[in-house]
Amino acid sequence: MDHAATAPLRPEALEAMLPFLQSGGFGNASSAHRFGQRAQEALEQAREQVAAVLNCRPSEIVFTSGGTESVNAAIKGVAMAQRLSGAGNRIVTSTVEHDAVIHTCQYLEKLGFEIAYLPVDRYGLISPEAVAEAIDANTALVSIMLANNEVGTIEPVEEIAAVIRGKGRSLRKRIPFHTDAVQAPGLLGIDVENMGVDLLSLSAHKFGGPKGVGGLYVKRATPFLAQQSGGGQERQRRAGTENVAGIAGMGVAISLAESERESYVREVSLLRDKLMAGIELAINGVELMGHPEHRLANNVHFAFDKVKGDELVAALDAHDVAASAGSACGTAVWEPSHVLLAMGLSLAQAAGGLRLTLGAESTSDDVDYALSVLPAVIEGLRESTTANAHS
Ligand SMILES: Cc1ncc(COP(=O)(O)O)c(C=O)c1O
Image 1 (cartoon, rainbow, N blue to C red):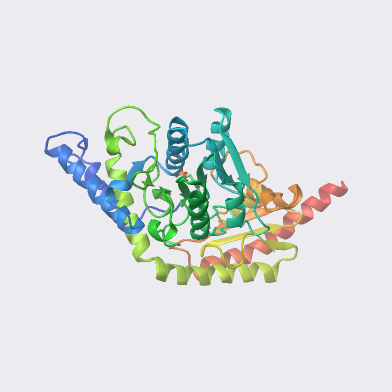
Image 2 (image 1 turned 90 degrees about the horizontal axis):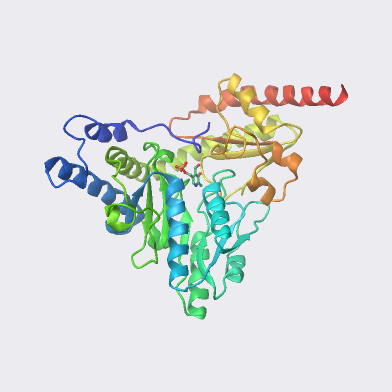
């Protein structure tokens, strides 16, 4: 129940990868001979597969080493290019972004960029009006995530894109819009034309591809300065020999995730609803985190009173349930979730956050099992907290 952290590799993706890990298929895509050409063809096929899902041109897809690199390349790449052309040095983002975005913005702050971190409401929603108000003549980029990795809230990216275009028109400048869509494939449509975004970040391991591979959509003519210097790979936008096998796996995984999306969302949302209802029925002192409707179909997140999320995760692990307290991408040291704090929770409330995220192999039996252990685990932790408080 921790699919937002990572999902298993799809067998079809593994099959697509194997030839490029074995003798005969190991060519460098930049080599002119047949081994290189074969690798190059695999890259271009995967680029077409990703572009078909995003409804963009294959040439607008840049392969990277994952979501973190895509986000870094997008935000730093646009920020630096905009600064160089004198288009501004202000970035508008939100307080609930993944650390890949937040820490990239903090890094740019040290280089003199001005960052506006927009607040969210109790559900983690960012208001398009707040985005409009935050944009000024100095604004170089807006970066707002498509779906939150912790609480599953889906942000109104289309409306945000519309207000950015509107503000851009009145300020007579084009303001690029990046969205971190790492949690979206297989759960939400990611048509870049419909969404109106200029850059979009992806990570293969979240949708059945391998770890360490990602994609970045960069709309043609977007100001962009490559963050890695070296060879001319990826049309000068990302230097370095490509991970051919990983990219081939990513192409297959995203195609499958998209073609199965509607039926998967129907099925997984039923399981999610059963899990949510079961928790609310069996356990007192719980509050659903994230938006009740505008949320990812596989995400359940509750804040439990008088429980520490990290202890809860350990206790659940002892019962063979894999869960997450806050985001999984951090270190082993527990810190309160910046997302829950941004949503207005106190430190004590934020400490009790638990995320359960379902996936394609999740079954009704899995949900029943989790519901059979969770109430006793919570009760046990609450009793020990009370006992400790009295001792
Ligand atoms: C919303 C979001 N952005 C970025 C990332 C980073 O992706 P990766 O771990 O592939 O670098 C994650 C990973 O959890 C994520 O959930």
